Image 1 (cartoon, rainbow, N blue to C red):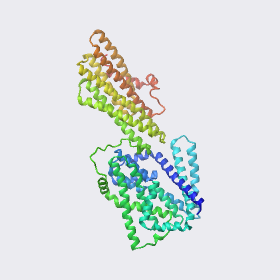
Image 2 (image 1 turned 30 degrees about the vertical axis):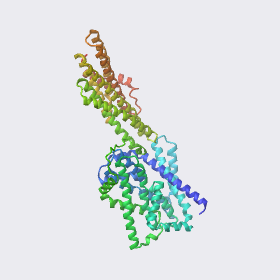
Image 3 (image 1 turned 180 degrees about the vertical axis):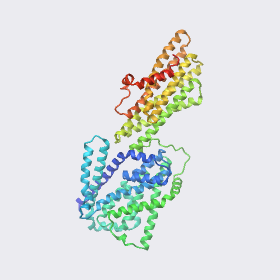
Image 4 (image 1 turned 60 degrees about the vertical axis):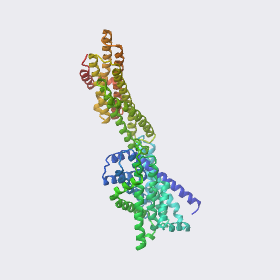
Length: 582
């Protein structure tokens, strides 16, 4: 084997690793919505969690990526530790799919069917389809499919290049001696763990082992311990990912490590005993592509069957190794680990935006209630809500900007844009609630009150404001276009009420039935309530735009007011309901 073979092997290895990374990233993007649904259906059941981990890993072709996601889920409290254990176990089985795909490179035979199954026959076609889908369509989904095909073609081309380059090693005595050395099971486990820890992918390290097996110098006796070690090495990614996470997330990473160490120790003991007692001839035979894939699958299934009944023990052991310290352990509400899976990251941002909606609506209701019956606890809740929405707006906005830098599909981009528009309106509603509370406290402190007539008018405006906030938030929380459609007519009525209430207030001032001091409070209140209704209109517009992206609710507002019979009916209905004092 000369320097040119070495360079070819390095090139093949680089293409192999690049193709695996490219394909995995594209699969995550294109399967994002499916991953979200799979995680959303997850329950505490062992089988459900196991199948979820298996399915997600089989889709994205990386148990490391799945485990890092699980750490993120636990850190964000989307999943508890017990659920995480089952998913991690399933991920260990799901990762074996890659080895079976790579085993296609080891197909030999002269029949037409076998030739067609060889990667060298079909990957050029996949590469051609992939480059067409990547270059020409504008659809991000089609581009992602093209990237998956290109990644797969690159992966298989790298595998074949690497296999061809190392074939000359079979005549190198030092290479043969190296794998004779790995027949020492402990050295084999160590070699597999170190290689996988360096490249941070058990699938990739198994692929490298399969390529080396093409030389005929890798026996099953050497390959089996290496495969066992690879399962330990793949834990490095999750352990690194858990740095800075909360205790339960660290425990999830620890469970991954414990699962693989315990499984490896048990299977290694069985391997040593079987070798000592039976000395099977198979262990001296040269390993094949399919043989390595089989060992990888059997080993991971055996570990899962062994430890699945002992998930409670694993959980307790992880809790002992990472004990509670008594310090507060706050979850990261928006975990950056999840940015690698945009659909799930987007779901987390959406859940927090839903919280903003609920907090803002409750804050406005509490502030309005304090106008007629001041309550210290409600006042404290209004101010706490304002602080909470300020923090959430900053956190969600920053997270969505980072997310937008990822490759999102059209649906994800639209959802991110919708959330970015909505968070500002929810934050401003909470701000106006504080302003309304301030007016209530000013009236209490100064001992001033509205006249009976003015109070009746303010009660009507307050009720209309509470209703519009309730409907706008409900439409957003439930993605309900029907609720959103009635927000704009109510906003128009509140605009009319603001104008009418100001006119009636001026009349009272002229008659001397209302003082100037209370008049300032009156003006502040109707201004804040009218602005709240404007923000509700924006929120309803976001919901409507999400239903029909070609529609801009505010640009079409004039047409709606002049042409929509439903709009006019709703305006008339709300006017009769709330303008009862005119």
